[in-house]
Image (cartoon, rainbow, N blue to C red; front, side, top):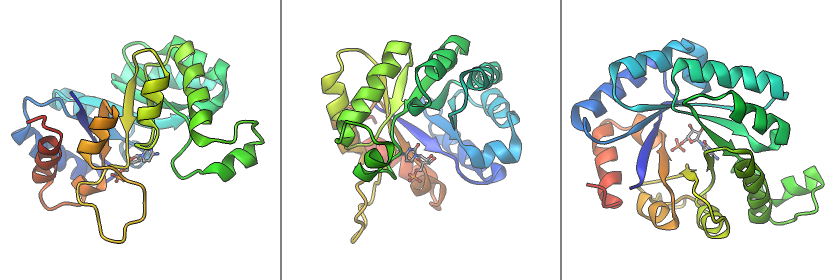
Length: 230
Ligand code: C5P
């Protein structure tokens, strides 16, 4: 099963309305609600608590942590206390940081972010790494992350198939950059839900196509149908 994660990068009240509307329709489908910096800065940890209290959905607190190991460890402890089901750390934070995050979590799954999709090969030059290929560099970071005990990764649709093929262990692949409508002239590298599922995505992240739609239920329904989930 490939699940849908709704990126709620909108004001809190609007986010709540979207989740309520979705819940009316998808009571039995395990959607995941993602809170990022926008809502976290507006509403704090209460956003996670309130969503968990009101709905049966898993909550993903996406803060992409990257700091010294002890600080990240303390943050992960608090995120676990809030009851978030998933959170993110930057694998570029290094082995000790990843290890500390994994050691401090309780029921929260740790997802590693390798390279942001806004980066390309020139970023590897900036880092002065000897690996010149983005996919190989991502594979290198993900291997280290999995060795240290992370539960999954956030990666692009370009990388997910390659990573699943080259890593002989189970991990959750979360793939953003999904578009239901492929817009004419849109040069960005995006995948449809069906393509992402085919390439091995376990969770797809859809943000603005849902949150900016007049009918979020329709968008989610369409994505689920495209993946053959309903
Ligand atoms: O569907 P849309 O483009 O609006 O999704 C944006 C969401 O995807 C944001 O919440 C952003 O944090 C997340 N994202 C991510 N990693 C990327 C690109 C986007 O987590 N590499």
